[in-house]
Image (cartoon, rainbow, N blue to C red):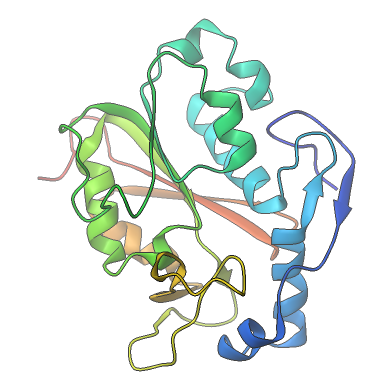
Amino acid sequence: MPECSICGGARFSFQKVLWPELIAEWQLSETETAYIDEQQGCACDACGANLRVVALGDALRQACGTSLPLQAFASTSAAAKLRILDINGAAAISQALARLPHYVRGDFPAVDMHALPYRDKSFDMVIHSDTLEHVERPVRALEECRRVLAPGGRVCFTVPIIVGRLTRGRAGLAKSFHGDPSNSSQDFVVHTEFGADAWCFVMQAGFTHVAINQVRYPAAHALSAWCDHGRQPS
């Protein structure tokens, strides 16, 4: 088991999180069900971060050029300079970063990812976790992330990825919801089931580089994207 990228913890506990209706809607095999359960249900005993959040923490640490757990990094002068937009939050990461002076939290859908209410080039980092699948136009949302990033800035995010298939939209299919299975709020409706080509959405949005961090493949992945300094596409 990996070290937790948020707190440095080494002990994890597991519980299943998927429910039969979602497994059927996504047509998941036993293998796919098992690794998604691991992704969402295997969590650090110390801070509660599941493997998805641990992967996102690794992406953030790489973007910041630090090997420190994020809780420790947040106390450094380098972290204090960062302008961070956190969309929706990933609990353990948000708690670690929220005390930084230039941290901004904006929750979807109150904050429209198709038209972020922030100035161009106003952040060094944009974070979102398992949110893009709920946005009707994910490429447009990533374009907005790119717009608000300063030169050299990065977007770091997760989406649920079924690695053995390609992405498909759910238009024309029965509505599928994430989160509490008893909650059919439109905030939780899934528009896109991401597959192995998830990185293509990043490139379509105009980024020039994409990186993938993995934790216990194929269980958990996080993507980060950035543009060459001085070559930010228009």
